[in-house]
Length: 138
Ligand code: GDP
Image 1 (spheres, protein in one colour):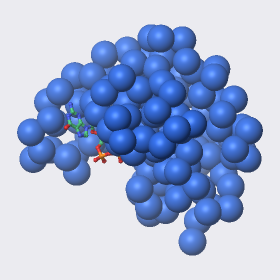
Image 2 (cartoon, protein in one colour):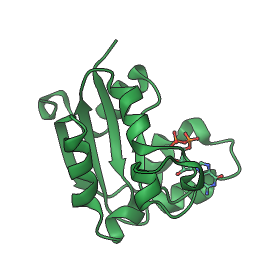
Image 3 (cartoon, rainbow, N blue to C red):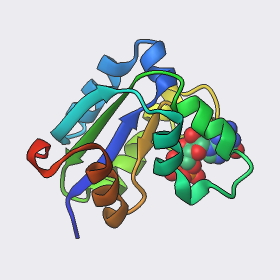
Image 4 (tube, helix red, strand yellow):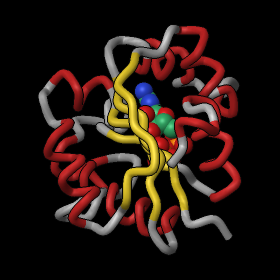
């Protein structure tokens, strides 16, 4: 069981200036940042990252949104990282997210929901490797 997860601070949260506040919540929740970069995703890259959703009706919207501006990608380390980070970010739809979660505080809608968090340790490794070479993972 890996102790790492992968996150992105999405373009909506970047645009609204929430990057610093979200990183502070991540640090205060006990995650160590093992890799981090601010970048933009081309439509092609966003489409590849979310390929698992390619048959879903919202795929086009998701690709448009994720390539609409800068994101911050990071690998985070902590015991039980995947599950604890999913708890910290809250439900996909901010309307259902628990009080105090990142999505409750910063997300506007189910699509523009401020942050990504891996759903398994296996995907955390694949997603981290999508953005960072092994030399960039500390
Ligand atoms: P997550 O694991 O909580 O991020 O949720 P999913 O894996 O189910 O979906 C991936 C991402 O697709 C979500 O974080 C949203 O940005 C987006 N998404 C999910 N459902 C919808 C939807 O109904 N409409 C739109 N526009 N985007 C959605």
